[in-house]
Length: 294
Length: 325
Image (cartoon, rainbow over all chains, first blue to last red; front, side, top):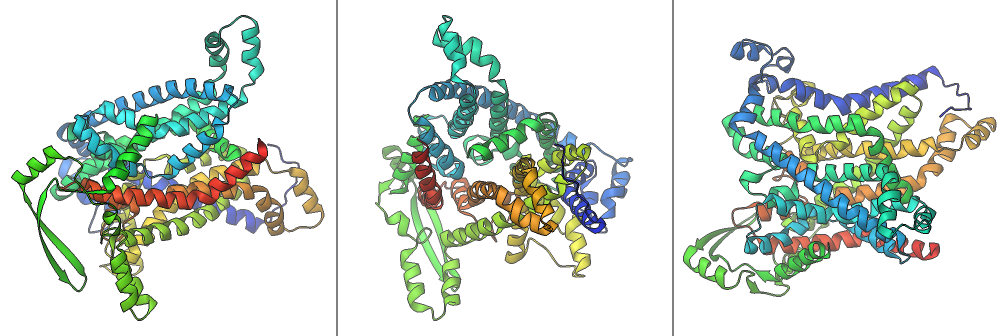
């Protein structure tokens, strides 16, 4: 955006604002960098009693492994603690949550946006209430029936629950995207002899991708970041990454294998990093779309 | 969808009206100055029998809501009667688990929300004056604390503030107190959790405000400059009114998000010093003896809290919608 205003800011103001931004960047990025760096060290370096500089230089790591960097944490987490299972589970859960909620979401939201009734209001209210409600309050309700029916601990159950919790939000978001697609578009398709379904398939489907991708990103993030539901509803063998990491803390802190948890944390952060790198624009537009609409 | 949204709520409400008799308890209660501790023993044979007969437990009506670990009406009433000053009353109430959680949740919500709005606004102003090329990069890095899984983000910070971690040991050397630990004292734990909260959610307000700044009417700004408004006056009288609707939006979303604060408490291992409504539900559910009815009761109370918190917003949306229609 080209500014027509010629701003002649004083040097000090410019200086202060730059300092502030650098400061913020430091706060925002440094923890990630630090953890990434430290994950290649041994515990005595990363949590050093002598001096924090040990974590940078890695003296103990050199002593224990003969090198300044070691993959021991990763190896331990991956092989010994079977973190790869959690990775696969997370991938499965996220994939299915995104697919199912988008399928239901696109069809449902399209129908809602094309019907004249005031669904939108109730949808908005539902989405709001569900946004505000801690998911764990619902988990208490799920547990007993799931125990009774023997559904507890399975990945598929968790997918269904996550989809259900996320659905009002997905529907609402897609609904506002469909609302932006002019009605004339599918009307003209119908004039040309399309059935309703064909209109959706050949006319709406090709133009709705930006909205679908953004919504998909958010349901992916929800499934990926969820802790309350996955921790409570999955059995030990089926755990996804986040509860698995939380589980590490309970067991391994005493065994002195904090580095497994550190390494797993790094591994769980990498996909998010890549996601932000490629989909930054969609994430920002999704966030702000809510702001403008809401 | 209805099935999975409304049935659990119904189930939660039903469970909250029942009390566990799945396990036959032999309860020993020993009270000391700080409150009561219950030791329970389980009779396994009787438990199995009862569990098979009636999985829900026995019906107790609303008494779950009023017992000690929830609303604790009796305790609050007696505390009110007996305590001379408000401080004393507060101390007694603070020892009740639900009120403790409620106090923390509210303090957290109403501290973090304004702070992150201010912080996000400052970042947005700062980034907006940056060079075009730098902006993308800065936005990329700024998004990270928000996108990262809350539990993981809190763990990352938790390791850094560990007394052997970088921030923890730096603080120790700054205050030259080798025993300083952020985890050991309640106020410090609260502050840490709130700092985490601001760190985690400031990017959100930043992104929203930054988008708002992009739509700033340039001619208004220009005429303000011609009229001789200083930079501060421009921010105060042009920019802030322009993004005020966004502030309400961000505040609303963050109130909801902060009200359900949960993961950082698990991540920071802070349950001893700070509990939120969500984390006591988690504690009830995750324990050995899955206290379903207790968790359900807290859940119902939390949902009521959410509704109370949201009611002004819902009302406004309602009336706004009517105007539009």
